[in-house]
Amino acid sequence: MDIQSLLGGKSKALVGLDISSSAVKLVELAEAGGNQLRLERYAIEPLPRDAVTDGNISSLEAVSDAIRRAWRRMGASTKQVALALPAAAVITKKITLPAGLRELDMEAQVEAEANQYIPFAIEEVNLDFQVLGPAGTGADEVEVLIAASRKEKVEDRVAAAEAAGLKALKMDVESFASQAAFDLIKRRLPNAGKGRVVALIDVGAQMMKVNVLRDDNVLYSREQAFGGNQLTLDISRAYGMSTEEAEAAKRSNSLPDNYEHELLRPFVDSVALEISRALQFFFTSTQFNQVDHIVLSGGCAVIPGIDQVVAGRTQVTTEIANPFVGMSLSQRVRPKNLAADAPALMVACGLAMRRFDA
Ligand SMILES: Nc1ncnc2c1ncn2[C@@H]1O[C@H](COP(=O)(O)OP(=O)(O)OP(=O)(O)O)[C@@H](O)[C@H]1O
Ligand SMILES: [Mg+2]
Image 1 (cartoon, rainbow, N blue to C red):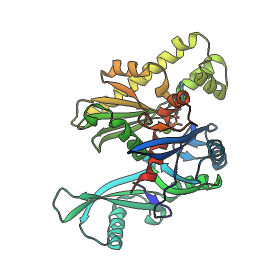
Image 2: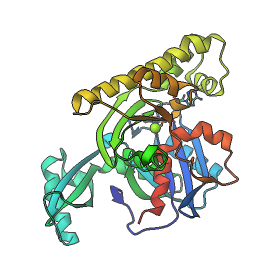
Image 3: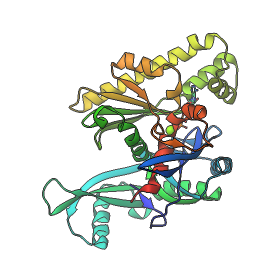
Image 4: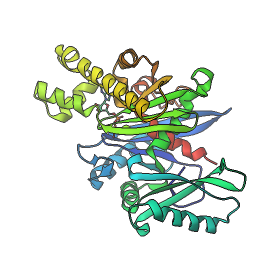
């Protein structure tokens, strides 16, 4: 859902724009007929350190410059973008309301309900809601999902897009966008993933995000400060490089022979350890005691062999996320580059899919 349809109405042309801590990422999808999607184009443009920290834009200029470069390089067919807020910046809550309310009455009710649990003044908040369907209690009530976030968080992201000459059309939530991309992956799981407990785990640059899902329900969500920046710092210390040099060397695999044994493997082990701890937390805080499948995304998921190490430690089948597997690719997209980039494009892909929303 959108927490805010900035201009309202629907429009067919839309590019997904993920502003994350290490890069801005753009994805454009098209319908290819026969219920198939085509990846038209994508771009990843690195951000300077500290331009985005903890999901906040600290340097509007650095971020909008990167967006402009990415957009030019990609050569998108539209300036309209869908953006997302980090899950931590959004409060969501399900409430039940009487069925058959008129739009205005529903808005008033949602606002009154929101006032009760949002810890800041309603004037400072962007509020949005979506009717999910009939409530379990009976046909005379509906379940409504409310999403609220501070206006400034929304405005910062919109400002970054606009400063780059783009137009923000939709504001989503990162975890919802990656779930939308995960729906594409799920189709290929045994029995289309029905009834299976799946842990969607994203290991990015700064953060590790865990979302455990069953069908369309989120059973558990947690994020912690852990990610590839840790390995970058280790590299920079060990070889006396700047963090930028360390990052580039890490990605291009151009480090001394002892790197793999002394830094990379211990890092992969620590990823697997953090994941198995996260699953333990899930088990102790819910009635569940099993996960059927792990889907690993984020830039760290491209480290060769990481899926086997995670599967070995957790004893859970693990696959690397690639939301584009069932799609056709435009000629502009190089399959080899895409294979290395796909796991880090879940959010941008989910956002790009919003153009097909009813
Ligand atoms: N080939 C590679 N080998 C090892 N690490 C890689 C490789 N490619 C990318 N990474 C690492 O993945 C991380 C970036 O991942 P990603 O793009 O998912 O992060 P992000 O979305 O910007 O961060 P976050 O989600 O934490 O805000 C960086 O730490 C980067 O060094
Ligand atoms: Mg990310």
